[in-house]
Image 1 (cartoon, rainbow over the protein chains, first blue to last red):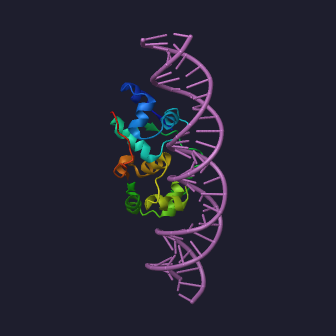
Image 2: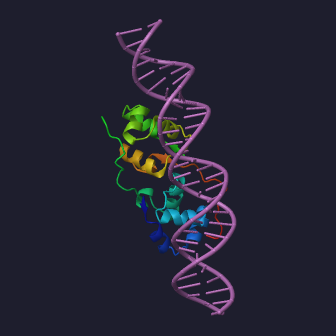
Image 3: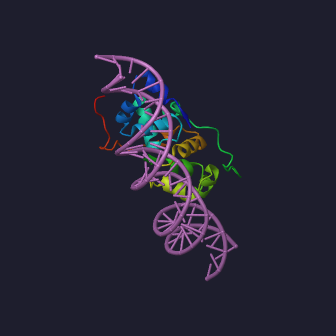
Amino acid sequence: MNNRIKVLRAERDWSQQALADKLGVSRQAVNAVERGKHDPSLQLAFDMATLFGQRIEDVFFPEKKSDTDNNEEN
Amino acid sequence: MNNRIKVLRAERDWSQQALADKLGVSRQAVNAVERGKHDPSLQLAFDMATLFGQRIEDVFFPEKKSDTDNNEEN
DNA sequence: TTACCATGTCAAGCAAGCCTGACATAACTG
DNA sequence: CAGTTATGTCAGGCTTGCTTGACATGGTAA
């Protein structure tokens, strides 16, 4: 899951710590999401998008589907 | 986190099992998300919204922010 | 230099998301 | 009646998201 958090944060000149404070999460959580270490929860994704005044789809970008996905008899 | 999965599923006349198969997750996962037992991962939320041809914001609706959220010195 | 700030990273622990397997109920169909 | 489908629910287990605390590095300021 790619995202534009680093850019959106830079546009506002916010540190990871400042963003974490606004979101009510730890700095490490912001860092991990920003660097793609793991995906945020849906709730946190909503909070981030709302804080940046964007839609989730304009902040987060899922990778292509994993080949373990099913698609039989649709 | 409220959602419109049940309605979107009913509009297409899909069972929970059928939806789960399309998404590549278990029926219980669909059931739990649909009934608000817990939130889906961001990836699963994307997959659901995409499958229904909707935006995440038009499928999932976060509750009001919890009062444990911070908001100091913004 | 010392001090501070921003960022990256690690460890240990807890909680939430998702899994399989199982069981129950209701509705429908043969 | 028996059999199937859809849904709801539980238990046990695994993985991941998030926590606090700690440490390292690079940049910048006094």
